[in-house]
Length: 142
Image (cartoon, rainbow, N blue to C red; front, top):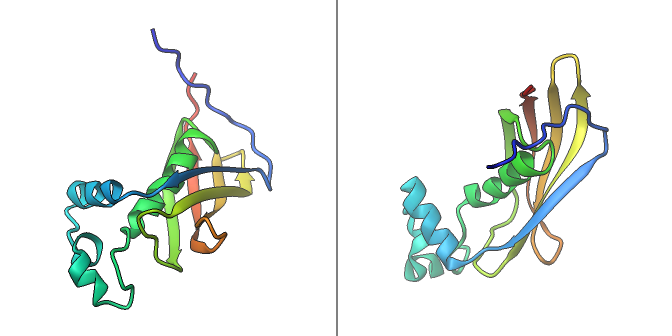
């Protein structure tokens, strides 16, 4: 029997959570297969070498997926439903990069069960590769 995850209903401005993952070629190829985005800058090394990136880069949504993982499992956690997300892609992510996704509570509206968070991703060199803001509904489960 699986226990039902606990849904949090109280949050503090400034509270943070994060997770890290090393991006692999297999991750990039899997993302292409899942999304159908076979842009050669992601999947064809010979093509990508001729671009400004000088090699394959990960799909931007791969980093966004790490943010989603933090939101759905850590902060705010189970029961969180995306309402909106803004994103700025600042620097390319490549296979071998260790990406840390971090979220921070910037506003909590308990009367509406709505939480606003700053969302960011950094690489292993602490370079910010993505930033944005997310708004989520906390689905109360009895």
